Length: 217
Image (cartoon, rainbow, N blue to C red; front, side):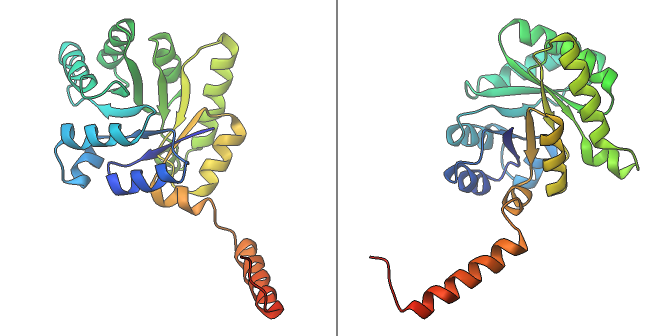
């Protein structure tokens, strides 16, 4: 499974990239707002840090404006992936931009039918929102399962990008189901390494080593 980090915070992106844990980045208007920076400026800096896809989202809602904004975003850097909403105009823009060779990420997916349409439109990625479905007392992971089966049934090349991930269990379950990518907040990625038995075992090893009086030189 590939890991994308879901943030526009350059310091977090740089930190995780140096650890070798990041394959790409996803941003959205809310994350750009949180960064407090100009969208072009911060997106260009992110693209200079990360070699993989960096999703940058259009804000238009009408087809022609979406295509225009998408091409503007794509000029920022060659690894831009144009993020589009899962609407009829968004799907039309996805097909048009994909036909011109741009990478696309169709976002705000909440049903298998929507994911099927995105694949038909040629999306590079589909972003089903796990956490938001869970918030409505629905099973976000069941949506990932349904999409995986449909895509496998017909050989669609669109990659499943599990989004709106809230917990480390979301990451594990998405990996078990076979999501191609998980886009994860920085704190959740770092939490994946944590386990109380790891901490306890390390504490014991260090205590025993101290008793030997030795050093490794």
